[in-house]
Image (cartoon, rainbow, N blue to C red; front, side, top):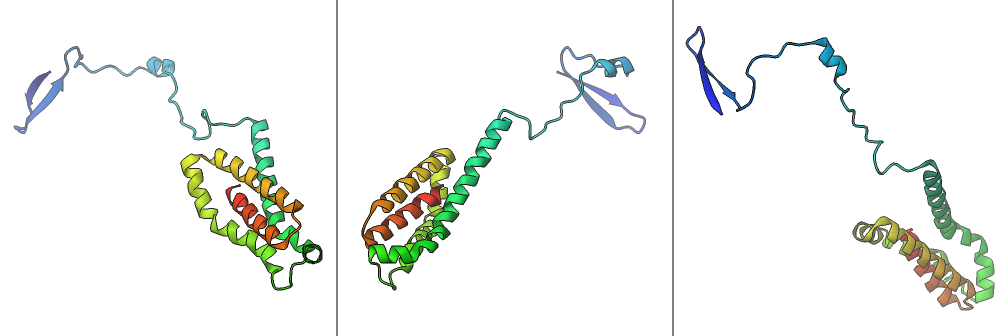
Length: 164
């Protein structure tokens, strides 16, 4: 690099840096050069490698909708069957509330932990594990014939629902 010094009319010295191989002469502006230049790229945050096709978006929306409905049914759907559960499983009136509360309590308590697990191990893996966990314990609870066992399986199903 070379430094050139120029003295202006007011006595101030101005330095210019030129790189080797650079042409210090100014280039004339031409409209032809602008017309042939490629247009500037506009970055769009919606375009990219993570864009989902329409069928994958529909599948994703269907799965998430089903999961939300499943979780809501787990919280509220059982309330209709509480009198029948009380008679069939021999649960006392005071312990009947635990059938609904066990699910809600574990769902709420494990929600933050499930979010952290999703951060560490991945959302998809955590989601699939939670849905599987929920399905297994709901199925086991459906075949039990004891009140305390049913309450425990409802609590375990709530853990899975918090991951889903």
